[in-house]
Length: 251
Image 1 (spheres, rainbow, N blue to C red):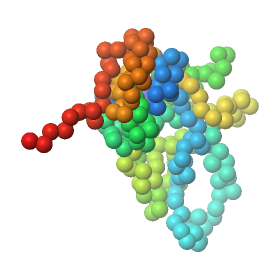
Image 2 (cartoon, rainbow, N blue to C red; image 1 turned 90 degrees about the vertical axis):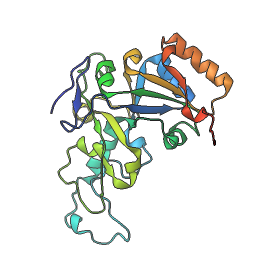
Image 3 (cartoon, rainbow, N blue to C red; image 1 turned 120 degrees about the vertical axis):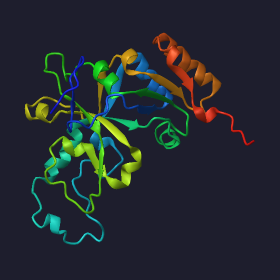
């Protein structure tokens, strides 16, 4: 394992896979973006909150679900692996040099939202150490691009407890996802109470955010409200409009 230095050591889930200046996007609905600015936190969802039913799976058994030779001896501990989803907190980002119409529709309500741009290098400098309680130790922050695998054909049997959240079924390859993850499995093993839902991890937004992009269907009133919050956060020079507001020309 290698680390990327900075204020909070951000560990690579697979050494050598992180491109430090790669552009990463996160899309928000306006209310979540404003609360992020106000509170100075990034939300990490529990993996069991995601809609993807294959999250954390090491294989996909196709219908009709008859005997699968990969599971001739089914582990009795599969439920324990399923519980890892509750104990793994994840922040998802989109890898792209440009804004995505699909991401706007999926995460920001038909372009009615806000996106921010960053890089892994900015992330490693911006995130603050996370503790479940002030008196507890710092939890490791892991990072890396998601690897997309045809789970109908292979069984990722050697996947680590955390590594399984950094590959997904190939049907989701269009997401081009980069993830940050904090595993609270060891905390629970030591009888520490773990939130069933997500967690909020402190971040220096001035370091994290390179650009703020307003979605193309935000109303003028909403734009003014968001602009005021951005100005209060000292980030107004990074605010811009979606390219989808541009005027199409035909001659």
